[in-house]
Length: 78
Image 1 (cartoon, rainbow, N blue to C red):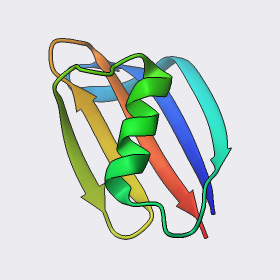
Image 2 (image 1 turned 90 degrees about the vertical axis):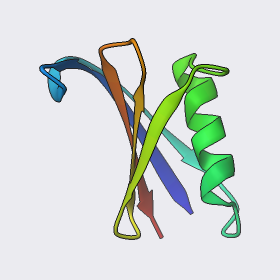
Image 3 (image 1 turned 135 degrees about the horizontal axis):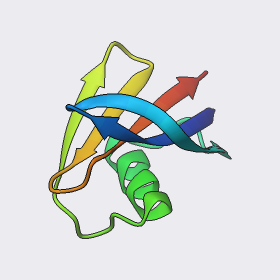
Image 4 (image 1 turned 180 degrees about the horizontal axis):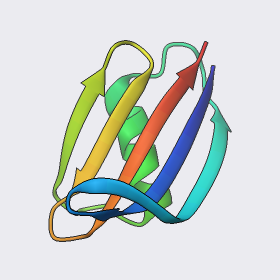
């Protein structure tokens, strides 16, 4: 399973894309969403930082850290 991470800044709470950082990771099929979120937070440098995590359908997770004007999207390619 391929997982894509996309981190960008926000403006007014919405993604702004004045800059963007992207990465792709190959993960085993049975990797849990929680493990993927932990990996994404480590990649973004947000380990230990409180974040709001929302899932959309089966193919996207959105992570918003509190107190930081950034957002991270996780998309799945099965």
